[in-house]
Image (cartoon, rainbow over all chains, first blue to last red; front, top):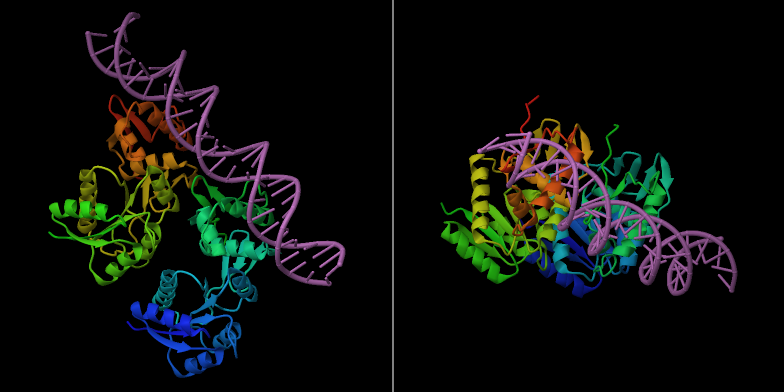
Length: 236
Length: 236
DNA sequence: GGTGTTTCTTACGGATTTCTTACGATTTCG
DNA sequence: CGAAATCGTAAGAAATCCGTAAGAAACACC
């Protein structure tokens, strides 16, 4: 109990809100208001997880993240104001473990913190060095750190939105996602009449990675339910 | 006696009704009104079985189920308002142990709770890690978690309705089901002049999994009674 | 064998879901 | 600023699934 979480944001209101939230969940919370303070605390204290804002004075979140990565491999969750900003984070693809749009429901934040801590401790990979960053599935190879996809060794040029969808699929092969859930997780907004939008993106992704987009091998539809990334035979 | 059951539903009326019902059967009942409360209670209390609604505010039943599965392997029965919703549950195939349509007769609910608890305790697999999720029968292999059927190693593409029928058969090999019972359990409605409907689905399933659908080896008819999944010789 | 009952088979229409394409708005980048 | 890339919407086309109906076949019993 009482695992230590460091919250970093220049907006004190937000830090306070998150503080209250996480304390209620039983965590011990340390606070910092810019990147430098954060590094300072990390140097002195034992911390199990970091929640950090992207936009900050003195030393911004992404730069701080890089510094953190230089020494430790603790889970870092990046907060960002808008959904578009997460594009930036993804693009820069520094080793953040998760991304959460900021002005959202606190419950989800708490849940993600919990989830990361659990995964981290149970898998016992305290600085396990090379955490698996490549996911292979048949012809496809996805690098979760670089956020790049290869098909038959050839890089696939995906747009930001497409990358996020592929990321979701490659991290959860075999699992079926309703279009509505895809929308929520990729756009980080409530889905409203958005099935068609998702569908068009699916179509475009298929065109880029399937040999025959009309009869997809990888991104399959599950009738009446949603889409899934089909697990292909292992050809180790 | 007095095994603990957690009931989760945002409709307090329903929770109350189930509470009364289960208490009468001798269970101890804990209550929660959304997914987060449920996780909270599960973290603190010893619970033997969970009854959870799919539709809920804050953290819906399916998400909650996933979270539960991350740590414990207790039996979870998913409640859903409509029959179509169970399609989703089946499709998404997260490890629920059973599905019950909500506005139905309380006796059945009690029976299923009892049945699951009995199976669970007698098999004594309190967190036995890998609970058997695959059922083999001759050429057929059915994965209860993924709700997928393989024949001779090849995946069999079943529709939602077909999957539910196959699920019933594979979980109860050798048992004979009258068409009328199949209808009730799959459609979760009263059967009225529905034998033919069931029959057509049986036919379609046979076409997909039998070598010679005209002389089925697996889904056999028991004249004047119903259908059954024939148990085949083990060829371990 | 005949007869009534039960099961099988096939085909079709309607409903729903998914696909596909095109186009205009917006953003990005040189 | 202009060209290219990206994105979301709309709308018609296509695919899938489901239940019904109706005649054929199989069965049981006399």
